[in-house]
Amino acid sequence: MTTSTDTGSDSGLAKDLTDDLASAYLDDELEAEDAMAFEELLESSPEVAEELADLQKVISLVGGLGDVAAPEDFYEKLNRRIRRRQIMQPQTASKLTAIAVPLQILSMIVILTVAALYMMSELDQAPAKMERDTLAPIGTTDAPSAPRPVTP
Image 1 (cartoon, one colour):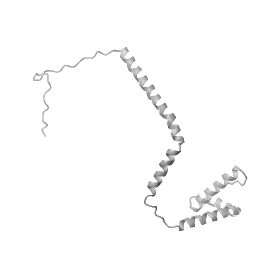
Image 2: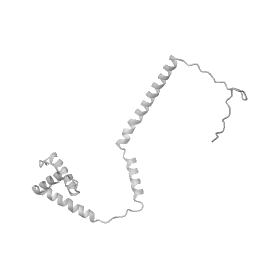
Image 3: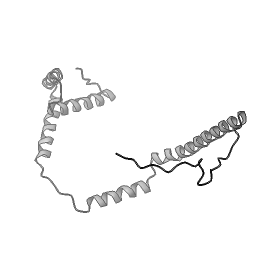
Image 4: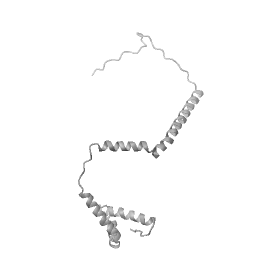
């Protein structure tokens, strides 16, 4: 495992990586070799050891906090605020919808046009003669018989 102590974007990346490793180390989520490498980093870097100690303090303070019940109207107020923000601030999703809906309509028109042209070409190739079925008068032998009851 290597970490960078350069300045600039590499140091920000190294700090993020170190923070993630510290969190995983405290949660016992690291593999054995990664945990040993992180422990070596702790021994060689007092800054990382200090960050780990600070993280442990924060975890213990947060763990010591008691449960707090939300007010009865919390969810209602939260939903109102979310809806208000959605109405007041147009989001990128609405911009995408403004483009997507006309494209969907256009694609449906194209599909229906192709289907209609196909059906018209099929009718032109082999026009079918439409015949009307005639029903036999009631009481004649050609009429279907009534269903018979099923016997077990």
